[in-house]
Length: 413
Ligand code: HEM
Image 1 (spheres, protein in one colour):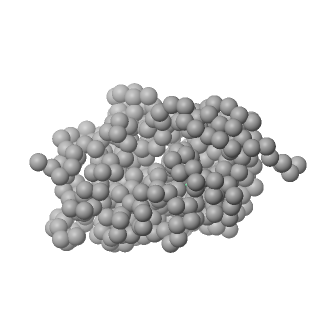
Image 2: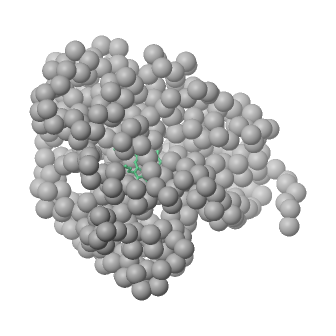
Image 3: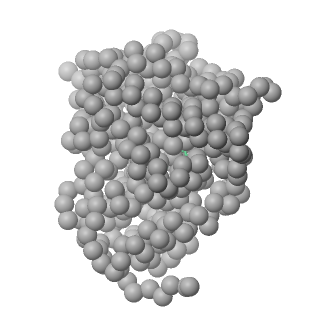
């Protein structure tokens, strides 16, 4: 008899049905922080649920590898993964990883993100202004999803008219197990045609930026060099894929889940509205509380003893960031949203070698949106039950119907 129901932790449909398995994780943190689980149709894996062990693993990238796969997939999908060797930095290990990551780093420093601040603020303001004085809407599809989409689209050279197309591809990719979002129930067929479309679209963008370089990230990756040679096609496409997918779905999760959390903590929302200076700590607290990226996988390159358990070479370890972010030994009152929490050693952006390359951009994007939103909202309530995407990786909200009324605000021209 297993300590917890393994399905709750790993099956995408369980996330759609029950949400994040907070109780199961609390049991594991208390009784077995490094615990081997088996579920038919999935590879066996070690569930890591406490902060300490996740940090220990993340800081040893030579022993705990991101290749061959850094997310859990069912046995039946593993073959597709092996046949599609698109290389993203999140799938690379030392020594390659650092070389490739260096290409993106200059574009995502706080200073470089500062250059995008005008665009980010205007997009946020237009969206919140567009909500009018009062109304009802699906906050996820109309706001949470649109703001990061527009920012990522601009930096990746996607014109406004193609945003719906790109949004659909991202939804189909992350929602591949979700009956509403998936392209087809035949996952192999769905993924093959999806990658084909993605490749065709960004292949053209890359060719254009090689011929006509501009001041955007698309031009940086299109013209990148590794060891003095142009970056390979698999890696160039990998960069487009990771930037779009890692940049969009995650920030959407943070904005959508963030508003849901604020509705559960109205006192915190009022505090933020009264004090916009709270934004930097508030944004990180939302990432901790929501943890849009639920897990990542590492594969052991050699035998290793972890938390009193013997890990064998080739074993898979699932780092449940969401569980670590509620670790009672690290956070006071971990199940409450405390916007001025400081320090906040959350793992919502990962830690170590693969720490989120877009964290500054994510903070700027969600910060701008929430600054506008909390200042404007007078009242907000749910008008239906929020629905979650069936995913183990980014099980964010896909629908959240709300009714709202705005304060009257003087707007500078
Ligand atoms: C709230 C929003 C976001 C969250 C919660 C988030 C979370 C994460 C996490 C947990 C990782 C670590 C993966 C690992 O442990 O292997 C990661 C990596 C990464 N993220 Fe983010 N992310 C967010 C936004 C963004 C944005 C906006 C971008 C870029 C436009 C981005 C680009 C990346 C990239 C490129 C990596 C791979 C880094 C590497 O392997 O060295 N992310 N992200």
